[in-house]
Image (tube, rainbow, N blue to C red; front, side, top):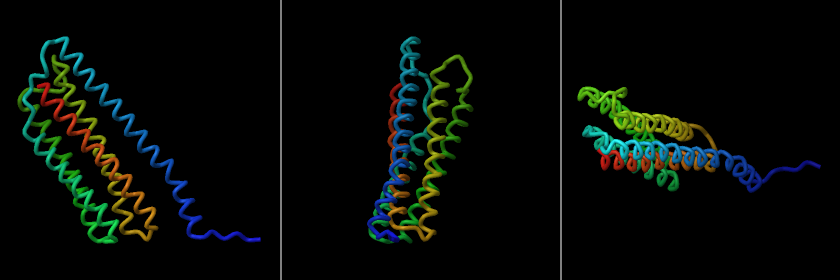
Length: 196
């Protein structure tokens, strides 16, 4: 006797296979939160022992890059809505916009480091708090590049003939991670700003 799978069986099987992948993303997010919590705790303890913050005026590029990241999250939100309404062309355009803005954010972060160096705030110096500005923003930049990989995966899905469920999953994973790094950066930027 041959058993054939109907559409409900296939959907159930696909969801069963995708759940572990989603769990891994959430595990990575929680691990990242713990890591950044450790960074900010170190910064607080170090600053308290020295009686001062990093003493650095953060470059204006940090605020501009924050705005770029917020706009990228808006584009990704709109891309998710476009997918739900079945407008794949708009979804693709908005995903490309999100990706481009993410790369612009990365470029602006690197330029902000250049500004810091030009003011004499080097990574290696006598004030570990200044070094932590580089560490925190650098590790966040690594997360941006991981987010770019998720975006590329979601963009690829708009060109492939994959099931709507799989495309929805790609978008969901990209959205979860991208919005996480957006919220994380806002927290980090405000933290650094308040402790300067």
